[in-house]
Image 1: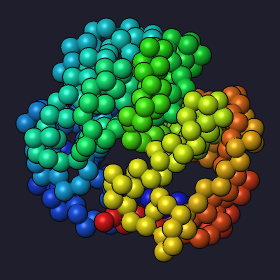
Image 2: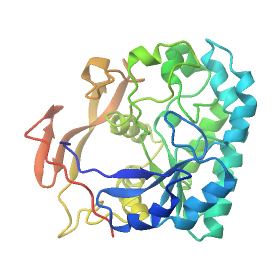
Image 3: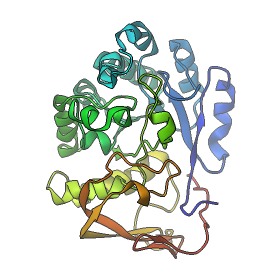
Image 4: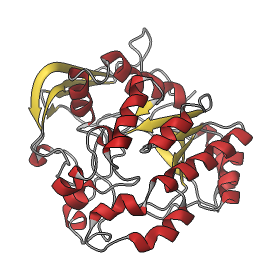
Length: 323
């Protein structure tokens, strides 16, 4: 069982395109996930014709991991064994923007909704800000909090993720997007790899980091630093996801809506510690970092499920329903 209400993506492959039309009524399915470039796992749809098929048959939002597989393959020779700083050199800006241009073109051609995940480059920010409407996009807290080369010096392969954390010029542009309300959501891109795997020699170390438990402390700290307004954050993590994915009865404090609330203390100081992580991976890239602002209570379906860092009662989360 899960403590929170939940939904999952249906993973698109080149073979299952025909089934994508039947997803409309699948309970607890929020959309279709498309990996245009290979990340961790084997759900790759990299041929343009196959991406085209996915959008053609899609009956829900297509959420895209947008990196260009051909460019990634060509640049593989730039990987230096044991040097995680070559990660953003291998998976460069070109791999990201060229894929994102292609996805937007295809989504527009089929008049379908695309939600582009974890945007990392200034090029994509500039391009996507000109292509709103059916195209929405996400930025993660980690890309708004760390930048290269510092993060790799401090964390090594624990800072490795796809698309990568890049230099400060990209970080600055992501904040520019936030300031101008270009992006639509903030998402954690939660990938709880075990330490035993993260400790492997790069590039054998898997990409990704845990992020669900730290999303709010990290972002509320940015609120306290004046980098983002609380109202904006509420839009990005509560209201906009409901609009994009068509989630029923969530996202707003309204009569007849579900009583799902997160209660935060904007002044409470919290130091993130690996041992306090609820995820099975047992670590956080923010281990030892102090943030101001944190959730102190969670109400799920009208019942208090977390109070002052302690889980209460039994897991009674339900699958989300969609319009």
